[in-house]
Image 1 (cartoon, rainbow, N blue to C red):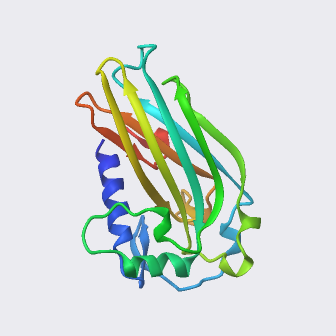
Image 2: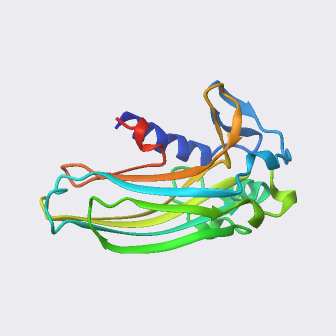
Length: 205
């Protein structure tokens, strides 16, 4: 739960960072080198994995969930232009606030069993991005709308939002490598509130 909260704060703070700063890495903040050409950090294809990890009514057959999603590539210059236009304070931006975005994949799933995990393999990525835009500090944007009905709580939870992440990730030696998978996780607490995360499920506790 703590990691989920920290992730949300990190995403929010990231969206408010000045253009001179990069995303938070393991060793702290690093100065962004604008338009650093890095095609080796772009995977040919991406996987997309979505999971409903926690639900009080998971054993009730009447429980279900629905999801719609879109995955975009946002060029570095457009991402930082959006930062400059963003209002001060907390916000829940939409994909429309990132002009120049490139759609990589989209889908919709209705009334799924709560035990089901959505997995999408082989989403074309690198070839959809113009070569000049394959820079290190571009972003991947995942927009989603989720509806979860918990039959035990007799509660329906709705939420729409976005997650932003880089096209690369850090390996165990803290080296930048091409990101291969985008994760999206949800969970419902016993008070009916929603948890959401873009961390790999195995790292959540």
